[in-house]
Image 1 (tube, rainbow, N blue to C red):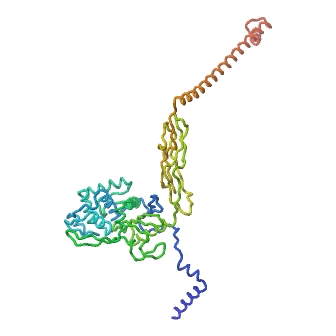
Image 2 (cartoon, rainbow, N blue to C red):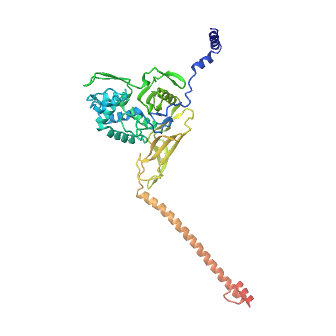
Length: 455
């Protein structure tokens, strides 16, 4: 009792005499400037507007992604089937239901594609994944081929699918970076954005089942469970959460693809291989880091002169190369864009005629040695081909140069000729002088001296 009283007294004294210090210790602002402390095997956070990676951990390491696979299944479904189209669950789909998360489909049950998509993305129904895959391509194996073709088209170079739901398989893998690409495409699709952003959905009575309610497994929407984010305790529920997909298997661990919006900016994060609920802590650290530590910097403005290009056979010798659009980059608030570099890849020379807006190359923007954007370079004005008059004028210039060269050569030859004539005259005079002084015609004085010595 005395010890408790002593502790209480000490706290009271500190609070009275050092109130600001006490409050700071209790309510200290988390250090959001430090890098996120990611516990998962791999992670990445990307700005949705620019596609720029703001932080990453082993983002290119292939690993299992569990039900994040269903983002690809949903994308192919929405692109190739109509929402009101009816899908009938076959025996294979119904038999998948007991294997993990499901929407309790029965063999022969009929649902619309839209209802199936809500089942696929909210409760992460494996049976819905099989039903949709077979409705579209006839078999799971054929659908996997379509999935891989789409992945290649999206530039997901380190991804391979063998099934539509994400069951563990050594040949079924992806990377955090590839999943970020896929999640961004999902969020750009109006219908899928609505589905993944729904907390609850009700399916009406079907030919095999009563009406049922589906709940989103994404805890970012509503969970009051507590996690630690930047060493601060908070509920999992994240203000501004938009979607997209959860995932878990024994091999993949806990995975989460998430999107969130704040102050007009949208971020997408991917976490792979986390422990239970730590996928949410990792995700929120990624979000806080991305939202708080980056500012948008306009690097190139539309119509900005980026270079000048030489024009051959034109009425103008050079034409300005202009950027065809703006380029902005998210830069760390602490470096003021010092690590931004622009690489101009303009043509060295082009031939006339040239139209205004013709392609003259590209300009690529790098931030911390990673490409963050690019623009096309276009001609600032029309350049017509040189006409007859201009051609004669050009020919005249060339002729002038040629004439000058010829004149130079003639002048050099004339000087050599004059020198030769003078030298010959000098020699003749010397011989004549030798005849006069020594009486020996045809010899120079030096030659005469040599002859006399020989005698």
